[in-house]
Structure formats: C-alpha cells, structure tokens
Length: 223
Image (cartoon, one colour):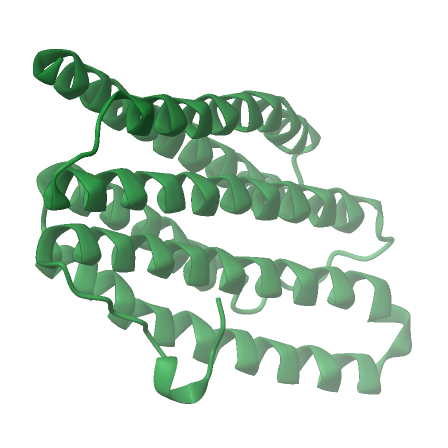
C-alpha cells in the first residue's frame, strides 16, 4: 500500500508539471498573438484550453483517489493540498491566456495599430514568474518561490501605470478607444496571471516550510 501511494503521488507531480508546461505554452502563444498581431497564435491558445481543462479535471480526480488510499502523513498531505491548489491556479492562468488571445484578436481588427505601452515588459515579467514558480516546485526551492512573490509588485505597478496612460490616450483621441481598451484588458489579465503565479509560489512555500505566506495580505488583497 505504501509503495502504491508513493507511486500515485509521483504520478500526480508529473501531471502537475505537464499542466505547467501546457499553461506556459498557452500563455506564450497568447503573448505572441499580441506582439505579432498573429491570428494563428491566438487560435493555438484555444486549442491548448481543451487540454488544460481536461488535465485539470484529471488531477482533481487523482487527488481524491489518492486521499482515499490512506491518511497521509503531514508532509505528504501538504504536498497533496499544494498540488490541488496549484492545479486550480494553473487552470485559471489558462483562462487568462484565453482572454489575452481574445484581446489580441480585437487588436488585429482595430483600424489603427496602437502602441503596446508597457505590455511587453509586463508579459516578460509574467512569463518569468511562471517559469520560476514551476522551477521552485520541481527543485523544492523556497528561495526561488519567495522571489516570485517579490516580483508581483513590479507587475502591479506597471498595470496601474498602463491603465493611467490608456485613460490619457483615450482622453486625447477618442478614436483610439477600442484598441486602448483591449490593451487595458491585456494588462489586467497579465496582472491576474502574476497574482495566480504568486499563489502557486505561496503553495510551494507552504509545502516546504509548513507556513502560510500571503503576499499583500496586509493590504487585504484577495487573489
């Protein structure tokens, strides 16, 4: 029974890594759709969505089956709970990638090409955070997870600055409203990706150190 439990737990970890990979590719494609005005990259995101949703459900069911095998010791239970929450956060990141792809298509359809403002820098940070969160999970690296938490503030600041800039651009020229609102939506979705990635890093720290870390908890920021 013990060996079977450990084997199934390893399978779950492998599936979470596969989900990390799918979500990362989906987010990359959504960002490429924005940067390159690429309809094929946007459509690729929708294809990833089906695989992501199916795997998320498979992992959920795997957690239930694993808990039915036996009552796990504290460290195993923390890992299982972390996997369950990371699974949900990754699926939600996939949803935000879909939103970004939809906005990319909206930008393609606008008559004028809007400047991307801080979107490229935000995208770089969001992708780096997601990769670091994945690496921290694989390598059981709490220090790297902590660095993910710290990077969240950077994207929060850039999102606020971009929204202010968009408001000013629309005020100056209302003909740009459609494209600029799509940029604002992309910015907001990237900010949410960063929030969810921060949640993942918090779960890694919870598993490794048995302590709850809530970034921005003092500000009442719910993620």
